Image 1 (cartoon, helix red, strand yellow):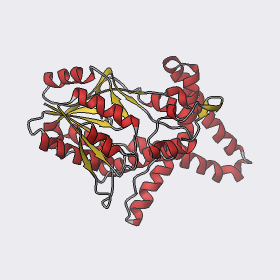
Image 2 (cartoon, rainbow, N blue to C red):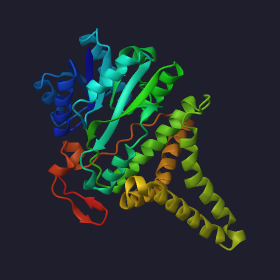
Image 3 (tube, one colour):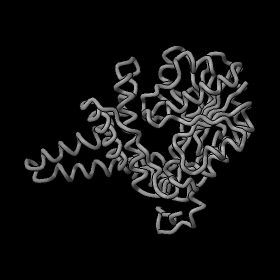
Image 4 (cartoon, rainbow, N blue to C red):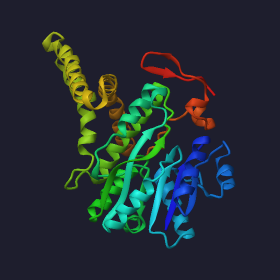
Length: 354
């Protein structure tokens, strides 16, 4: 009745935990590998999991991996009504699937149910904490799900699945098409998966934000003219904060004796204070400060992603997938906690190389 699909590359022990949880909750499991060098393929097969090895001569995207995993899952279980999609660095929380299945059975126009994704090691680094806060999304009817969700086969096939050409943000894009066809998506308040972001360096966080900016711009280019103006606000906001406001300040500087630059700094300060105050009650003083600071700074990375998308489009070249987990841990598939105790100071921490 339920097929399971996991995608990943070089996830090491994270993949083992992921597949164990899928084997517990799904009737059969497919793992889609995108060129791992850490023995992930052999590990999955030793666990009795069906493996699809992507042809890496073709452009790789997570959307393509999920589509190929879905196709194989349908071959194995042609009678399946639902497919549980999970990223290879996530472990499904027990009892989530039963609750999600109950929701789907009660509403035949409900396309997908997702829940709360949590970071396994939020205190390992400031960037992990930021990622954990990122998963705190509104409960109830939602515009989209993430990479982890229980999806109705009929709905998935109704929109021909993910757009394999989209290099990031493929879930919101598919969910937009689902909603256009009258399907709904629901986010439960139950914990769904434990995620291991393994972000230990500023550069990783920056690339992740660039990827998000690219996803926003690509989504707007595809569906921005729709009635809901899909992704328009998400794209224009960093354009204002990281381009329009600084440009005006610089251009006005000669005529204002530099006061426009002072005003720009003040504008960023006001935005930081506003976000800090707004989030303090929900996140706590320490986390709200971190969130506010990196939200302001993140506009520049998001803008870089927007520029990257439009520069590639203007040149007639599609961007390659933007990877942000690089480094020893991601390459060898080890977890943050396996690389040694955190070292460093203040809110940010680093880990020893594996």
